[in-house]
Amino acid sequence: MADPIPPRATFPPGFVFGAATAAYQVEGTRFGGCGPSHWETFAATPGNVVRAEDGATACDHYHRWPEDLDLAARAHMDAWRFSTNWSRVMPDGVTVNPEGLDFYDRLVDGMLARGLKPFLTLYHWDLPAALADLGGWRNRDTCARFADFAEVMARRIGDRVATTATINEPWCVAWLSHFLGAHAPGLRDIRAAARAMHHILLAHGMAMERLRGLGQRDLGIVLNFDRAVPASEAPADLDAAARQDAIFNRWFIEAITKGAYPAEALEGLAPHLPQGWQNDMAVIRQPLDWLGVNYYTRHIHAAAPGPWPATREVEGPLPKTQMGWEIHPEGLEHFLTRLARDHVGNLPVYVTENGMALAEPLDDSTRTAFVAAHLHATQRAIAAGANVQGFFYWSMLDNYEWAEGYEKRFGLVHVDFETLARTPKASYHALAQALAHN
Image (cartoon, rainbow, N blue to C red; front, side):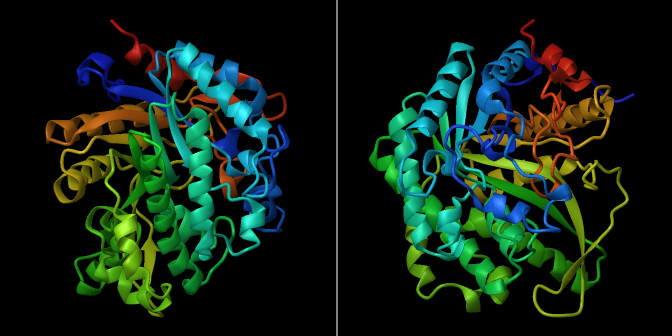
């Protein structure tokens, strides 16, 4: 029998528990004067998204947010991690939509009224289509527009949020979307990928400078990490895993903490980076107040013929989630301790996303076991010296899972996408019991 979810009392005093959401995945873009993002056009292109589904209605969190926040409060959570939809606030990427700002005003006030700390992420992938038309993250000007957006949000809700993250998962924004082509804008182009890999970090740095200038505190970024395991001890496979680790796990954190990109990644990307990129590293290397860590799985890598990065994924032997991802809680402990040792020292770290997709609608005991295993891994990392201060499950609600449409369900709460009715799952009740103050 799997271990139960460890109770709140077994964590350090003040440890923050919450759940995470993202604007495009839950709000519904057909409400409140929201403009189109590059996700609408990506989803409208045949073959990109399961059943060509989009976020037009999603979970209708735009109207149902009081019910959703009540669910978090009833589960004894301390915080709600959310993002702001750039296309809602600035439908053309530049001009402010008052309705959009009013919505986030209401949402943040609703969190505070329920005793939930608002953990803000400014950008979770919803780039305004008007900026995508100008090249999106391939275009350096997008970085300046993002800093403008960050300022607008800080001036409106910055006085009430507990923390602010600039970007969610830059690897997904850049590599997954511009090299692998799996997310909007769906490119498979190494020059586009290299520029997006650099510009997303420059946008982070420019926004950090702008926010600091406004006196905003508790600033960070949310990076995702995926353990890269070699398929064998053969030198070629070891090198393949090291290249993937450099691209996925080291590129972003080393730019921010060391002002440099890893050599194994520059080997393939340097010829395609924008001219003079080295001059941007001082802006990118802004001090963080905290780091967000998103962790889901590991992948096994082997050498492959062909151009750089010359790797291929090998299927692993561990049990898998509905996404086909191996369940490997040891990887979370690995990254939390590795980051403390190699990159951030005693900087506060939050596990900002961890969760699993599961087809079972309500009796999801597998998810309960998943949460327990990853919370135990977090506790082991804390015991080893990592300054982990919180854990956010992904996600509170079943939602729009990007290219997977509405098929993959990560939520603690089941959403009927026909009626939009919310029904807490067994995992929700198990977590609520563990978090109850006793």
